[in-house]
Length: 64
Image (cartoon, rainbow, N blue to C red; front, side, top):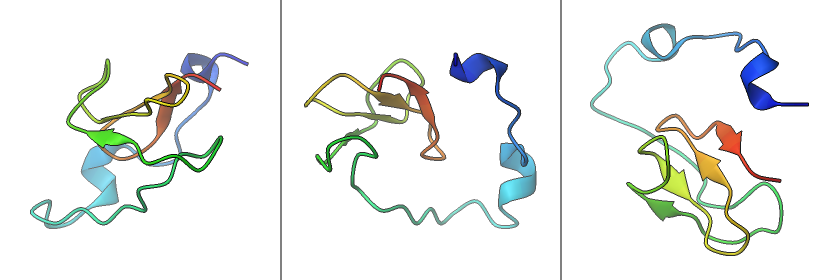
């Protein structure tokens, strides 16, 4: 299923009240690798193990 067809239950502006903090777990959802911050097609995170891309909120946008 292409992730672009999935509905996101919360938009970024509804996710946080004070956006100066972001708490994420730095583990890829596929193989458990550590994604690189401020990288990838959406400016969030990129997993070097197999090429997954995450947006700044940590949502998977491309990859396994």
